[in-house]
Each structure stands twice: as structure tokens, then as C-alpha cells.
Image (cartoon, rainbow, N blue to C red):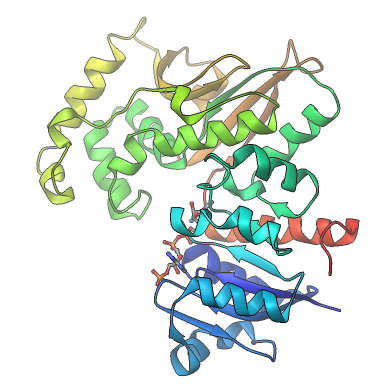
Length: 344
Ligand SMILES: NC(=O)c1ccc[n+]([C@@H]2O[C@H](COP(=O)([O-])OP(=O)(O)OC[C@H]3O[C@@H](n4cnc5c(N)ncnc54)[C@H](OP(=O)(O)O)[C@@H]3O)[C@@H](O)[C@H]2O)c1
């Protein structure tokens, strides 16, 4: 019997998921869908390639409270897939789980927030699939959870956790001004519409909180030491005003990083996590350091634990991308269904 699904979000990852559902034979039946504008609940499963048309034709103005209520009345153990970036949607995750629904999400707001510890417990039971909230398709979060569950003492998790920042700083390391790299990244759709969301370091800080909790640490967003790359002059301005003053970004980063310890040193955006502390900032490394060789746009994370002490476990690859994210989310769901933790 296929698992009834409600999909929230038809943006980049939501569209990639619909396209994979079209291509792959999975035991999922799409009965409801919504974006921020329209929603639709259907007794008959919706064909993934007809979703946009059906939303336009039969959809109503979005009221998530009503949609989720009606969906859970019809499908008591149904699965909600949250592919929005909305903190408001994330705020309902624990209530939905408590009502008997199951959840899969790439939206990190809930797991990085006050309900993080509770959600990690739901995740451990296989009813909250959240692997894609950090590192997109990379096998990072579940690896950490498995190490912790096996009794490994995790000493340190460290690396580059933002595809946007790795793009900017790897290009910068090749001699390009950081402001030029930012303008290129914006032009190629590699940043958030407001690049301050990437430069502030808060998105990376949220990922550290999620990783910290999976590693069994007591990591809290309020205690992550974040060195923002947003120049003071950019605060309170519109995006276009900021982009007219890109020299402020170069000056701010240069002041924050200080002088390189050697002419070959490479500046990298490092997120660091130990049982006691978490930080997001810039660091000079030698050219032979693994982080200096991270490809533009990739993530690269070292995990140091009892079994991986002298040579840390290294996980690297694309840290963003709608297709890899959607594919991993489906893989995680498939395993949960097979294990019987998700009730199909
Ligand atoms: N893109 C990636 O490579 C990537 C990788 C890993 C994780 N993620 C995470 O995956 C999630 C989706 O990312 P994305 O790139 O697909 O974002 P996106 O393209 O901006 O799409 C977001 C979707 O969410 C919908 N939405 C927003 N608020 C909503 C609400 N209150 N109720 C219902 N729908 C709502 C939007 O509706 P409208 O269409 O009406 O605007 C849109 O369809 C985010 O949490 C992101 O952090 C993304």
C-alpha cells in the first residue's frame, strides 16, 4: 500500500522531487501539495507531472492549517514532505509528528530551533527524515548520528558547510577580489536573493546546531560564536544599495581575516564544533590543508572521533543542488519504509 504524501514547496527542491517521483517507482502516493500561494488535496493520487497544472486549475488559496488537518483526517499516518525554507512551516513540525503524521524535510529551521532535541529523537525512530538539512545530498548527518549511536566519542566536526561561501573563497584564493566573486555568484544564482543571508554565517550556525545535536552535544544557536562577513555599512540597506558599495565587503573581510601568516596561506570559511563550543568564521590554512583544496561550491567536513582520531573521517562533495537533495531525501525515506519505521 503506497504511503500517502503531502508535499509542501514546489520550488527548486520540490520540483526536483516531483521529477524524481515521475521517473522512479516508489511506494509513495501524492495526495496533497501546496506552495505559498495555492494548495490542493485530492482523494485520487496526483500524477507528479500534472501537479502544477492541477494546482492552477483546482487549487485554493493556501491555508496550511486547514490542508494539514484535512490530510491527517484522511490519512492518519500520512507523510508530510516540507521543502519550504519557511520558519513558520517548521514551527509546526513537532505538532504534526505528535498528531501521528510522519515528516521528511530539507528545511533546517525546526531542527536548529528550540525543538531540535525532540526532533532528533523522532529522527532516531525513523519518523523524521532530516538528513538533507545539512550538506544537501552528502551522507553527513546520518553518519554522525550512527557514530554517536555506536558509542563513538566525537571530539570535533570541522569544515566548510556552505556551498556559497566555498564558491566565494575558493575563487578568492585564485586571486579574484571577493566582491567580484560575490557578483559572479549572484549572477549565477549561487547565493540567496539577499547575499547577506549567506554572508551572515547564521545559516551555517544552524547547520552546526543540527550536527551538534546529532553528535550528542548540547549545541545551542545562542552559543555559536559567529563572525559575520556582512560589513556594518550594509546593515539596514537594500540589496541593490549594498551591491553599489562592494568595496565595503572587501575592506570588512580583509580587516576580519588579518594578514596571511605566509604568502601561500589560503583563507577559508570554517565551521567548527566540539562538545564544548561552536564557531563560524574565517581561518588561514596552508595550501596542503584539505580545506584549501575544497572545490568551489562543495562542502568538506572532517569528523574526528575515537575511531577516526589520527586521520579524521572526511566527507566532501556538492553541498547544494536540488537534484542531489531530492534524491537523498527519497533514499532516506525508502530506507525508513524498508526498515518499517515509516508506516507505509
Ligand atoms: N536548493 C538547494 O540546493 C537546497 C539544498 C539543501 C537544502 N535545501 C533546503 O530545501 C528547502 C527548499 O529549498 P529550495 O531551494 O527549493 O527553495 P525555493 O526554491 O525557494 O522553494 C521554496 C518553496 O516553498 C514554498 N513556500 C514558502 N513558504 C511556504 C508556506 N508558508 N507554505 C507553503 N509553501 C511555502 C514556496 O512557495 P512559492 O512557490 O509560492 O514561492 C516555494 O515553492 C529549503 O529549506 C532549503 O534550505 C535546499
